Length: 60
Image (cartoon, rainbow, N blue to C red; front, side, top):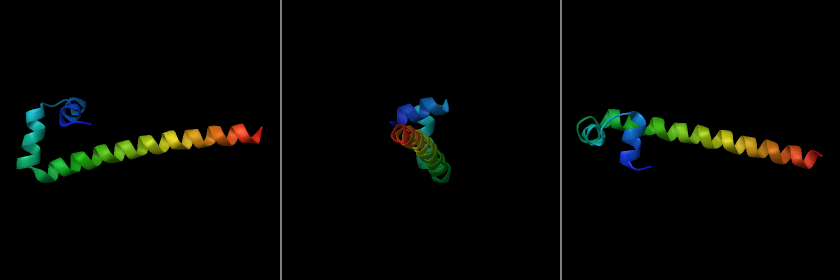
């Protein structure tokens, strides 16, 4: 995801995101970690669903 994508997702201007990165590094890091955790949760849910589908397929 680009910084432009991230800014759009957060509903802020790209310049705001760059300002956070330079002027408020703790806020920037927290936001970026939150986005990473969201992605991890999403991927985990998708993987879990695929595993269940495979399990169901082989139980037949």
